[in-house]
Image 1 (cartoon, one colour):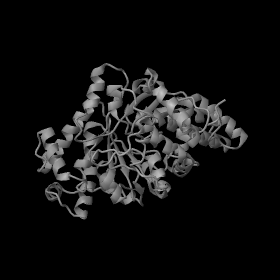
Image 2 (spheres, rainbow, N blue to C red):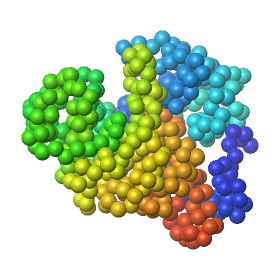
Image 3 (cartoon, one colour):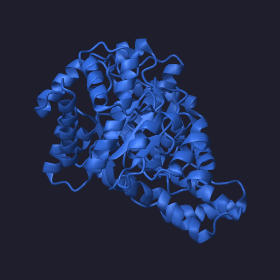
Image 4 (cartoon, helix red, strand yellow):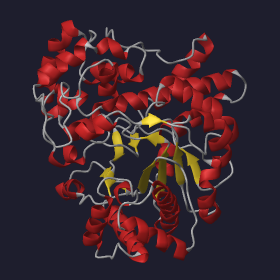
Length: 469
């Protein structure tokens, strides 16, 4: 009998609620997974090559893992994380794994521990906990598995019951791997998502050069406001041709703006030259959220706004290892004031879907739920980054449901680079939601038939509908 996981984990302690949660969970545990937003590498599915070793599969791509280790003094270099120049100091997968295993106790009480134990037990059949003493046992067994056809990326895609997975690529990406997947004849559905930050944020490194590259890709004059907007339309169409149904915008704030055409053109002229001041940069990002929303009205792409993260907070880590190395930190975020300019333009558009994410839990009931509870274009994304956790999910449901209801949310997405953790993350979400629904039934707020329908909606249907999949 496996020792890593409790069969009734995350269900309510009250025995009657637990029994109902378990029954609800059994109806959704094996549903296909819709993964509409994430950061897995499309190259894995294009080439379908074996993963190099356990460390490269589990440790090196996952900032949830290495941020905890860094917080305890372990260096990114020792974990084999590539530096900004592409060099890698530690290339010995076993050494990386041993270091990870020696420090596995650090993950006690975290969602990462739940995801990893689920992966170790259900994907690799491990029955003893990872530790310094079992590090080599784990490494050898996982490496042996990865050498077989059953653990190739496409085989795992099918084993995980992935109906569709969306990756995220920058506006300048040629989408080479997505073309290769499509041309291969494999029937796994891997689509892209349009992420234009590098050509929308004047404070993004190389912004002026990025505009030049955008011009070369599209044949548009990106030094001109109208030409710049047309370049986005063409890139969005290119991404749609590669399966994209959504865009994604990672902005430091949720600020939007509604400038006149002449004001917008003048602002664009200032920022396109490079060296924009902070006020101009923020205003340009704000205007572009509104412009992207208007384009979504035109082409039907779902718009995701991931606001409120101070990205790459450590300047030294950003300089040495680049972006997305675990140093994205939550900050206070306004939505009611910030979104009003955009909502004045498109808020009542029936064909538009804007999915809002936040790292500021204080705005769930005060701002986000009331907004999504009335504007037809708005939906609430699930808790993400720091709050895609058991308690984070519970707080979200408790704070948002009374005002926004269930049907102004979009179910769950895993937003991960860690491919093996996808089934684990969805399993956690399904368990937490079934527990919440069971307690709603016990409190007399739902009947069992409604809870069963909602369990299916939250696990599968809402994400598929919201992302138009």
